[in-house]
Image (tube, rainbow, N blue to C red; front, side, top):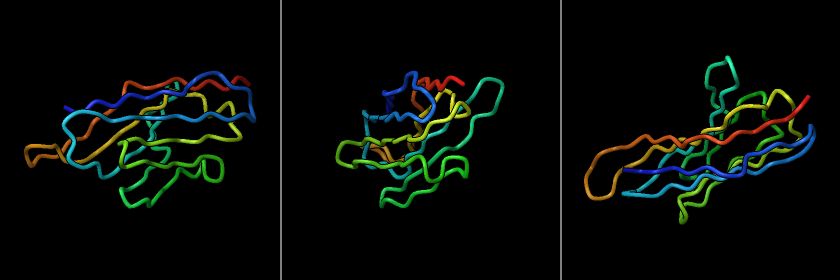
Length: 121
């Protein structure tokens, strides 16, 4: 099993910043992709940003230039630095990790429990 634990959410005024963290633990041989998704009330979950093991990143158009994803492979941790936050960024943010289990050659795809980010209008 692989567990993901997010932290860093909260309430911040428009224009402010937050940094989310997501630490993976468990039977991990290697984590390949690590992504951040978000889900606002009444909306589908959407990809916010992703990063490969080698550091290649991709972003949703709505967050380009404001959010930065990074990772620490030694710590199995991914971060999301969110600047210039807007009310439309309000959502529950989820971490996702895909990789290979330690001990047996199977892949995993795990989700965190989510962390709330609220930007009042």
